[in-house]
Length: 305
View 1 (cartoon, rainbow, N blue to C red):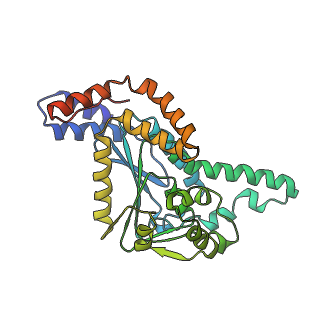
View 2 (spheres, rainbow, N blue to C red):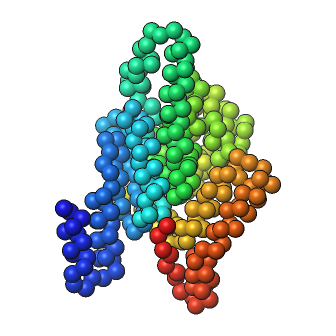
């Protein structure tokens, strides 16, 4: 009903470009799925904001969250109206990590099954949790994490899977898992070392669970910018997403695919991968549009994927 009403507004009368963009975002918003633990909006043209939305629980990750992250980012990955994503947290903190109370209530934790069979169920559950953040990395749209307050435990796992990380000056981070008797198992030990590139420091942070703060996060390369407060940071993240969204989606998303592949493979394999990828993508109209726009000193406009 809402989409039909908006469409009538779109086709009747003369509208400015900004008004038309608002109408298109409103139509898209009407079609965006609703989630229990996530708030998905479209604050800018071709930009989706995914907000962790359990502020009363400091955005702790319950069972619904793990399922909805997969549903959300699979949706975003296939959304032709989206070219970049900003990941934020509602309330006073980005995320407290795993919701321990909710985790303890899971059937596998209370099961009295034989240990080997219980272990197989646990393995399946961990694989499901891992998919909740791997889906961020597999989504070809660049994802910008904008973190304020605390980012604890699984928050590091999650943001290590993002493309770009911003934070506020009061932000702090903690690889918390050893303090609750386990090794991090949903991405920190695999992705965080490659983000930071300092093996000694990674091991220190993992083994001790000590907090590190915004200035250290910037110094070690975990974040690329620090902002004075959340409002300014989110605007900065949206500005970056808008700039990314203005570029060729063929070029940007192809770059993300190649970057992720090359991180996990050798140089020779990475070169072979991009060679095979670009043998098709270099035939895209985006290359011609970009070249023509550059020669004419104009801003190109690219078609949806």
